[in-house]
Amino acid sequence: MALRITNQIRRLRFDAREMTQADLAARVGVTRQTIMAIEAAKYSPSLELAFLIARAFDKPLDAVFQFET
Image (cartoon, rainbow, N blue to C red; front, side):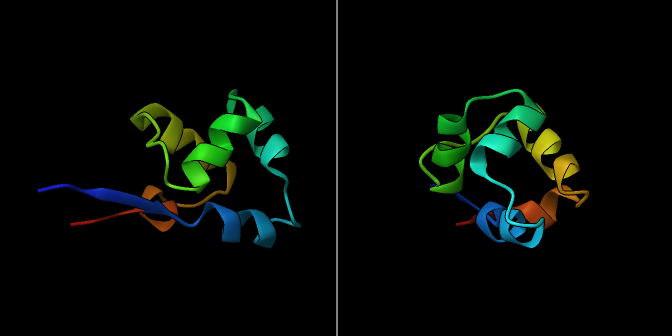
């Protein structure tokens, strides 16, 4: 069974006064390219990074990331 991780990062960035990918990357300590890949569901973040991203938006983890079977 393959799991697909989806996320709400793009919407959350827009809701956060149109935060850029670069702004989010700087807040969580990764590159803009990493954020771009996560947002496009091309890369699944580590658990630590997922929590940091959720914290950057002041949201619980499951409000940012979901998995589909």
